[in-house]
Image (cartoon, rainbow, N blue to C red; front, side):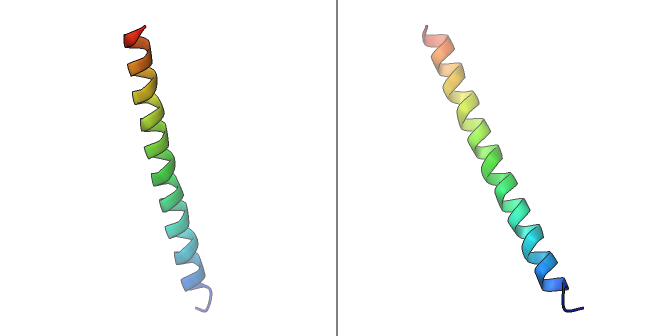
Length: 39
């Protein structure tokens, strides 16, 4: 049972990085859309 907190930490880390990646992708898509509509 000693490895359980470690697994939880990894799980939270993966969730957090996935969340940050999704925000970055959303920002990139928004910027690209604005750029293409202004051209």
